[in-house]
Structure formats: C-alpha cells, structure tokens
Length: 158
Ligand SMILES: [Zn+2]
Image (cartoon, rainbow, N blue to C red; front, side, top):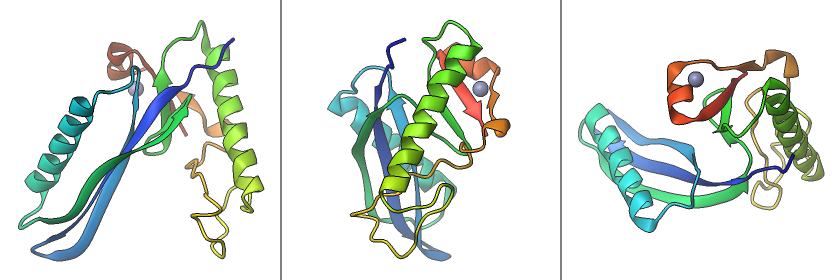
C-alpha cells in the first residue's frame, strides 16, 4: 500500500490578558488538499476569535501559522488522526506503526531517547517529535465516534 501524506500546518498564538501574561496555545491541522492562503487566513481568524471569546483583555503578541511537514498522521491531544483511505483496521495499524517507527528513528538520530526529549540539546538543530504516548502500542484505540466518520477521518487515541 502506498503511504499517503498530507500537508500539516501549525497555528499558534502568544498573548497577554487581564489576569495573566504570556499565555499561549497552538495546534496542528492536516489538510486533505493543499489549503489556499485564504483558507489558512480564515482558520487563523477563527483561532484568534476563539481566544478572544475565552479570555478578557487579550492583546496578541503574535498569532501565526506555518507549514510543518507532509506526513501520514497528524498529532492531536493524545491522539493522531488522518484521512480514512484504508481497507481495514489492520491497514490502519500497519500504517500508524510505520509512522511511529519513522518518528522514533528520527528522534533517536537527533540524540533523544525513545520516549523522552534530551533537554541538553538545541532543539533547532536536534528537533524532537513529541508522539504523546503513541510509542506504547498497547494504548492504541481506533476511535469510532460519529465526528470521525462524518469527517472521513481515522483517529487513534493513545
Ligand atoms: Zn472520533
């Protein structure tokens, strides 16, 4: 089976608010088709609106997006997702295993441990890819929720 890869973009923001300084958040999105600049700008606008609706007196220091990589899976909050182009669960798990192995190998090559970032390294030169526990195969659970089905996504919780 050919490994399908999709564009992943990261959105992140840094701001001061009434009761707190230097707050920040961010997330990654995987796009099935390469997103237009307009689509990315819209996402950024909505991202900022969500922050404004949750906190008082927000003054943005930055709010940006950037292209991360072409990959087969995208990291969420203790899960990974991709688009469902698979025949069965076995294909899903094989594909995810390849991805996890690839990221682990790259972490090791960059001087990190299997499950742990080496804090003494300069992360610009030795990037660490956080897998949020996906290293532990026994934790994997394919999500069967309505949202995933509706959006044509496969999510593996871990
Ligand atoms: Zn789901």
